[in-house]
Length: 188
Image (cartoon, rainbow, N blue to C red; front, side, top):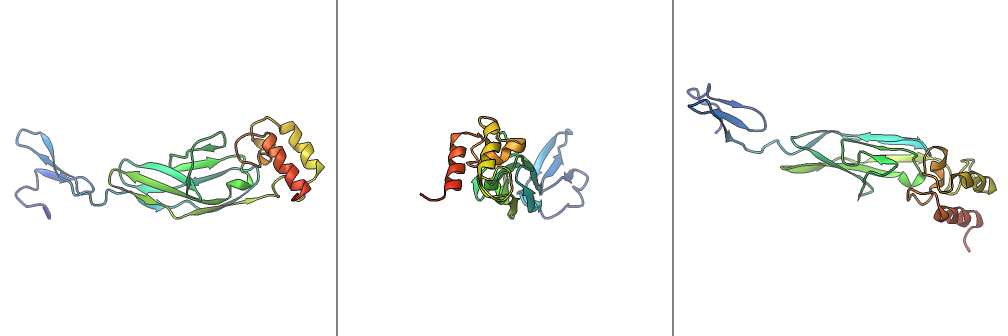
C-alpha cells in the first residue's frame, strides 16, 4: 500500500517503520502491513576515543536506533564480557576500571535486532603510563616496583594495585612477578 486511501483513512494508523494498525469492523486491531524498512538498528552517536592514565577509568557509550536492540562490545575485534574491571559489555555503555596498558586498543560495539545489525566506528583507547613492570609509574623498572608489587600480590587489580596486573588476567600473581622479572633482567 503506497499511502492512505481517502475512504480508509480513519480506519488505520501508520505507527512506525511501516507498521500499519488496522481497526476491524468490531473494534479489533490488526497488524495490516509491515515492510521492515527502517527497523534495522543504526548508530546515531558512535563511541568517542579517550586517553586515560594507568589505573584510571573510562566509559565508552553509543546511541542507536531501532527496536529491540542488543549490544556487544569488542576490543581489537575480540568480544568483551563483564569481569571485575569491565561492566556493561552487553549494554549501550561499557566501563573499564583500573585501566592497564593492555586495555589500549580500538573499541567497537555491534547493535543487533531482529532486522539486522550495525557496528560502530572504532573508538581508540590510549593508556598513559609506564612500561610493563613499572608499578610506581616513574618511567623505569627497578626494585622500587617490586616493593610496590609485593603488598598487591594476591589482591584484585583495583586502585593502586591495578598497575601490577601486567598479564591482564584479573589477578596479581606469580605470572605478573615473572613479567616484572623478565622486564628488569632483559632478554636471556
